[in-house]
Length: 231
Image 1 (cartoon, rainbow, N blue to C red):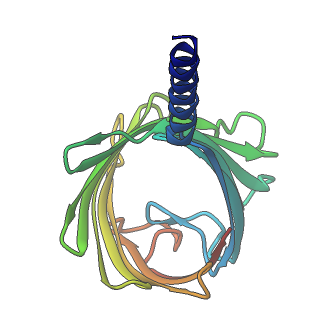
Image 2 (tube, one colour):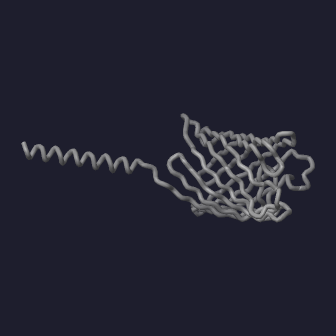
Image 3 (cartoon, rainbow, N blue to C red):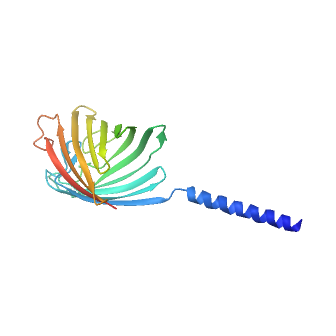
């Protein structure tokens, strides 16, 4: 009987250890990813952020299961003392059946912005995407209670799609509408493709344009080449 009790205790201990190990294996790990890149221009929602000059950027992303957080930085040129943009963001990416959701918040900070410029702003993001064979269809809404500069409430709506005819080639495009409280709304769109090589590098060539009639060349049509490395 004593031997049986010892055997049962040993079995129970083994099961407990196995269960603990399985639970540890199932727990999501924290993943860290880095990216750096250069581009011929920095275009954000149809407007150049570098006065049509080159861009150097980089960022780091942390993910834990469906949760994520990160930061990203780039040079900018707003014809004033502002030197760089630094973004901080976080969110969660749950799934609802075939739909992948993205609920997040983004804080845009600008280094050495002039006094009273009020460039810094926060946006709240709600996005979703659904696979359609080799393609993906998506939509997103970005809302800011106090937008960039003198803008008050702003909302950006976007529909987008991507298609991968092969593993290392992706084609994508988006159509968006930027709205402002008090007027000044406009439409913007982009279309391009990215080619990944040597596992870590992606070369993207993209066409951007808006329907703004007079913007002193800062939102005219343009083609942007971007080379990005991910680690």
